Image (cartoon, rainbow, N blue to C red; front, side):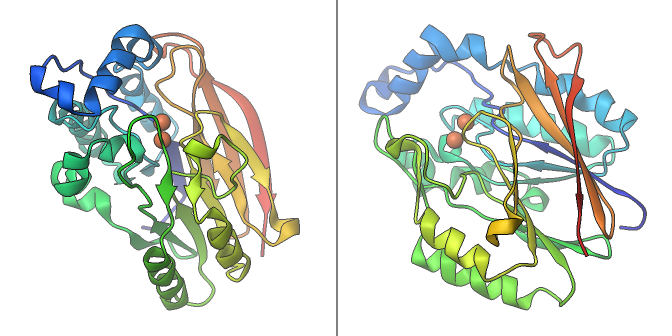
Length: 284
Ligand SMILES: [Fe+2]
Ligand SMILES: [Fe+2]
């Protein structure tokens, strides 16, 4: 890809469809559907991500990174909505990269059939690729099945080994954007943590070429430049579908500078996405 790189980082879309299948009484999905009926369905709106399509074109977006939780209970009907959204982005000429979150492998059945990889178009599951002349993208899948109210991820020793190998193989001089669903800091509720997050942080300290760490899961937008502590610039784009504080990040990358603009919409239908924060990062 030549020319400017403009990434739209979105996360936690949580497309939802209430499932009234009586067999779900035996499944964790009954909890997800009860939650949908009582609360979540009104908070995360299926139509809100679709409001971004024209805006992405207007802003010159070239790449869309989706850092997990595209669905709510990993149902086929929710994956169908996610595919429809991705297809619309692709029709507009945008390259889409996506990873699963804990909600995309919500039930033991979804984990067994590797639902995310079965349901998503192959090309969006690319886990390591060059981005223009100066950057490289590594997309990490740390999703796992969790029983009932848990929402943990797992940075297993096997994933650690693979990530170390991938990072070592990236051509010298490339700056890396690492995309994961979970933050590596474990300062949230214990049941929402990334198991092995401390090992991931330790690994990141040994790869200073990892410039950005993009994640979701918390549904709270955050920008934190941790380079003084030998860690990357952390970007949590928040949940794009949230009815009252939906947000996403526009990341404009050039060889020695990045501009990150945070867009937020308090409108239920995403009619007024407004830039609420701008940060510039310089690097060599
Ligand atoms: Fe989420
Ligand atoms: Fe999550």
